[in-house]
Length: 441
Image (tube, rainbow, N blue to C red; front, side, top):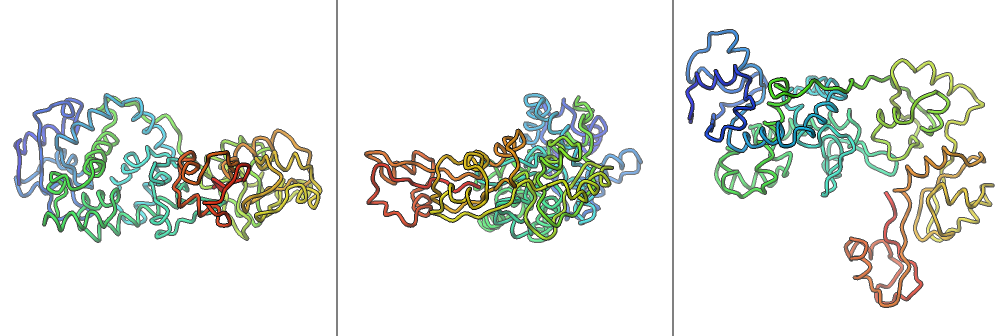
């Protein structure tokens, strides 16, 4: 065991606030405590290896963490960064975390995951269900599509359950348990959560070590992964000692809600209007929905503001109220919007405006929302703005264009552009030809 401070000094520091702001800024401090084998009931480290702990208060401090905590210069750096340099952002994250923390803690406790790991969501997303990374990871726990599918998170045109704060938390708990079962060490498990288990397994074999800090010192892993564990430990210590770091208690209130099971699609804007909700309430409670309409499935559970279930049931039982407002039509490539409007008895301009389309011809398959003959209103404009990301995007070929220049212009690969246009010969395009550059979400 390597200690640059005596155990009594460490205890004194912990009593002073378990890594206070002074600790975070003390460049001379370098504590590296090698952990024993860890179980959920473990404390920071096994003090019996150094000296018996008899004082109840000191034992309480050591019991404060249920994931090993190591103080290194990099942890100190991030303590200072989040407690001072980036203080406003950290306060905002702490505020937002209070909406979801009781849900996350309940799920982690139920799934048998150390509760200190709730702080990992600070490191991943700042507790933001809508967070999206450049690599395509999404949600509070930043799942990539493939990993999300492994843990049962559905993603399609209607929902992205990586943004569901309950389902994604269950998935994160199970993923963390699986990683710990594989590596037998929480630091390696956390690093694998960031970089993937394959990269961490390769690094442990290459350096013949299962100590995260030993591996990190070799610079085999990317800096993002080498810093991931120190960032997490900084977030954990701030979260569990926010007052000592000068942060105020979270301002946001916990999200409380009821649930109702739907057998037909419901338009959130129509429900908000009829049940006297703010649309923002329904969106916040159901962040997994990719459109302001529930999926066309036999059973879907919608969260609604707590204490309002009877009100919603009454609205749903009123046959004079149309809670869908639109019906769904899957248009095929080559169909004409004018004919679709005629067939459905709706105004062509309203159809195009609602679905964010400018051309009458469809150059790719498209999910269309067809008004149920209602008069176009402000609700429809708001709905249209929400689903704008679903609209396909087209590009009209100009003189001198080729597939390579078009793909670069739209920040996409040549392969992706070719795949979107299977009936077009890339070597025989001509000015005025319409090319699909995005089919929408």
